Image 1 (tube, rainbow, N blue to C red):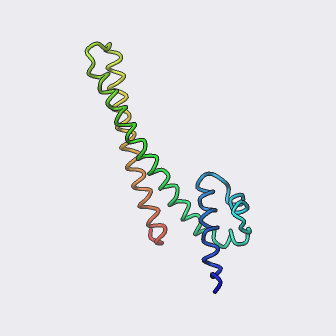
Image 2 (tube, rainbow, N blue to C red):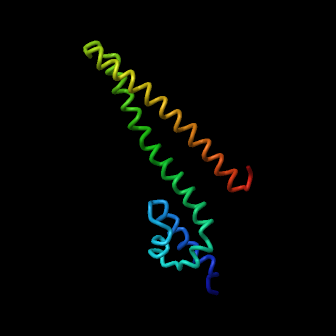
Image 3 (cartoon, one colour):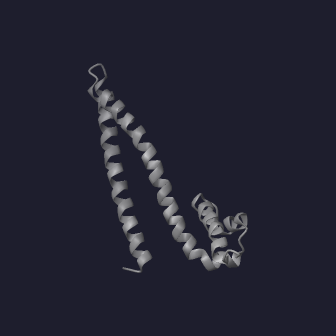
Length: 127
């Protein structure tokens, strides 16, 4: 028994979402995935929802990888901050860098959480 159209189309629509999430325009992504503009326009909303999920996933993966590097960077800054041989200017720069990074990470984390919550409300049709 042949596969239903919907099941055959799913991988192509996922391919479009992957390509759009990586930066291609919708039309070019559809062309590369072998999907007509008509099918693209019919499924654009679902593709866009998948793009949001993929981009969140990409950002989360990058954040996880950066976490290890961040820990090493903080140790380096901490060592400079507490190094009795370091000049006061070096120690002050290390302190400022640590504070700035903490504030920046905190703000980004809060914003990401709020955006994700708003996206969930939008997807459910809530205000």
